[in-house]
Length: 409
Image (tube, rainbow, N blue to C red; front, side, top):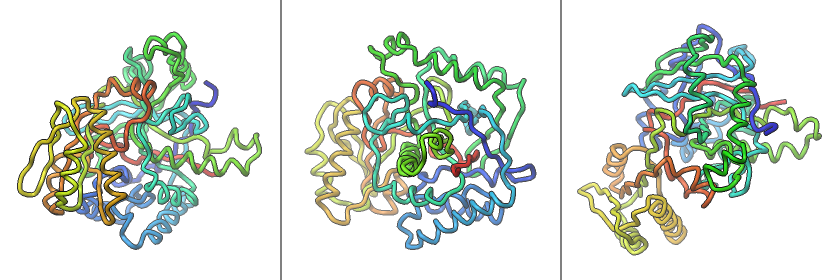
């Protein structure tokens, strides 16, 4: 288990920083709702903010992308040079409370990118869905000159006995509180606590890799510790960058270089606040030929809902969610290759999908729920789910950029 998990030096803003303006939602959210980002930008104003060191994906086709990326680099360096960040070595226990009062508890750790692969191979850290390769170049470009990372990635442990994270949470009152504040834009509340004995936590994670435990869960010794729950593309980007960088490093330098170890939040698949939500498809035109082809591509005893500006309909589909998700995504990708100008967006909430369909006069495909209890077994025994198969929680409940880590040597 050597190097699968590292104890990071976590960077947080110095005291006096307005944390409600500092922390902002993951960059891949609300891509069909520009008003969200306009309101957030106005709220943040001139205050230090992770909004200024990330690039929301809604702006990928804005025409001034290079300027935005240059501004991200400028802001990152300004924050580092001004002494905004205060470093603390250790894991951070995170309590996220969303508007309905439900809590998601995780731990900020650093994972070894040499132990990760997005292909179906036997490594301790596995991707859970196919990668949208077209969304990597911009992320790679941002990371090329970035001195720090502020990730929104979540990795999942398959711990039905709740032996790893939950005991830390039960004892949180005995440890130092690092932050405690309300998140902006309806994101709920978040608090962070120091983890007193990081080596003990690593030992508990190591126990999950015991061959007997693995065989009981998956039918064989799968060697899996983490499945990526959120941020597949962020981790894939960091992996690509690390693979390129390490070619120029000595073996000794590779062992300790900060870019090898990525900051992520570790969450128990069986913990609270871990509802798997479908990611719907928005087709940016009312294309009857597309719908006819989709009907022909799907069959089964299930029903798939399509939304239009003037109504909705249901078409046949497989009963098993994973088969429907795979068939829909395969059809969309094949149709896009044959039809120039065809556009699709991925929307994380059915109400938001309806709004976007009405605005675009397009087609909304309401995707089915993927049962979370099947996730790790599916990844181990079948392979990656198709692109954008599921999301953890509603868009407002996604991880916010908050903690940072250096990635330069």
